[in-house]
Image (cartoon, rainbow over all chains, first blue to last red; front, side):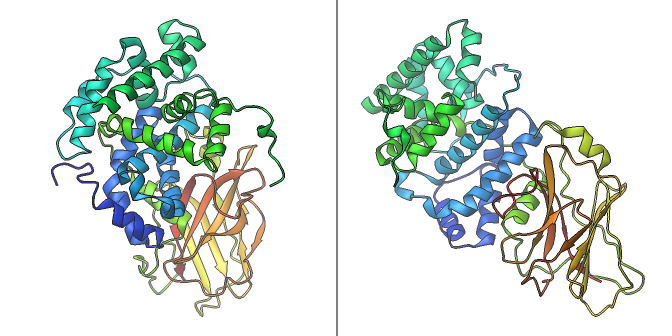
Length: 185
Length: 246
């Protein structure tokens, strides 16, 4: 193993298939292989270890129930798992209306560039880094903070001192710019 | 299909479905939009494909995050919620002699923040099961103890298969006003079954719960007032412990 994270996505798919068939040992194996990465993702959004671990629990209960709906054609296992984890985390912070401390963490783009080999797909990652770089800085900041740290439109509006509607426009434009760049690649 | 009301008005994503799908993935839709969009995803293949495409495009950013090792209680909670794995014998083999009270795996989580009802419960949770009569010791009685970090036993549950009861008496439980704690029996290889709410004076074993398998466990989850409405644990599992034969 090159690192403690998820090495190759390839062997996760059979685990998910086994989980769909009700194999608890496979769920455990999947958990061992991916839980640290998923907890990392959720923790960045929720900032609270205890809440993040609750969400992680829900993620794997969900995986247990819904493994049959995973479609390998639709994307790599880690993308599917990461999406479940992110959505659970976002659901949680959107329910908790209490104001939370939003403190932007820098270095997402650097980290994207530095991610060690063997994790994820190199070409996809490089393309995303390059295309994010081409997005207008304010728009990019919104995209990255929303995706990586769960910032809401309102929180982004406060950060950039702009109306919420402007932020919505920035997000949409940023997304379109990103998609255009990725598809041109 | 009896006609959804949302068909009358164009949904908010009608103008820019791909942008809305992107924002859904980013997580920046408002709570209401998010819920409506998630419902639409269930039936709209094109929207679902747009979402999947965005998940794929952005995933490398999420994958760049450093890993964090989860605490053991996370897996214990998962196991309790999906039905504990069969086959594994209890590590705490009962010893002969006096009543065995075995310290079981702790599923204790910290209460802070998670659901916002923190301290009241953490301070006061302690439960005791009344032992109805001397054990008939034919293997029909089971015991589970879950402790709260080595101080007081938090939960002792005696399952009496002959009397078909689980008796619970609460000494100092302060259940949060808007929640209930629900006790679950998690048999090997089967879905959790509710034994009732913690704090109820006496709980009756659900019909059909005959053989208590070795390796089965008990779990306590946080539920809405009155207990889970789905028949399965919905909230976080805060304690879990294996049942051992007396």
